[in-house]
Image 1: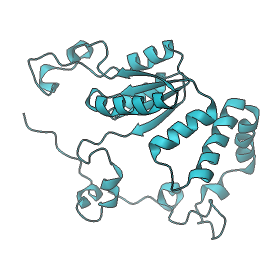
Image 2 (image 1 turned 180 degrees about the vertical axis):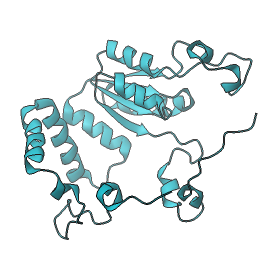
Image 3 (image 1 turned 90 degrees about the vertical axis):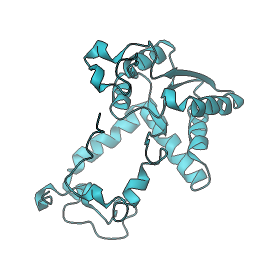
Length: 224
């Protein structure tokens, strides 16, 4: 796998992070210096012109300041809901994490928040209906419901939820849910079946146990 050339370097290649506090020097390829100031100013003006976007940005930054290193992700979401004044919140959950969804709903309802959850297998439509073959099922020859993130989004849209929370949707299915959700979306749990839903562990282990990640190869599918 070839290394990126200098003209294609971007924030994914940066180890400085000077854009945060301006205490160091910007690398030559820094997007802060390469992006026209007019573009930056035009985008910043959108926070000011859009009351909804501005409120979200300010609520998020205020929570960061007031609870940095103190509040868990669950608590930060609850604090965000309170700061935004949301009354009805949706949860798009994987059926494999219904227990986690149940616990979050119990916690949120204790704070007076109206929670409406929709599981990924809603509708119980067999995977073959959209073109998957029996061989592409975990258990060929049986009914195996497809994940239905678009229906999850539509049902939450019907409920007029003000914020939707993702709990463990599959990669790609979460993309479809976010695409079709009318309400803003945030994550509570990111699915990683191998690492107990802690995908950052693979990044931390990329120079050790998971050094295979630094090769051009991707995992082979399971033999059937």
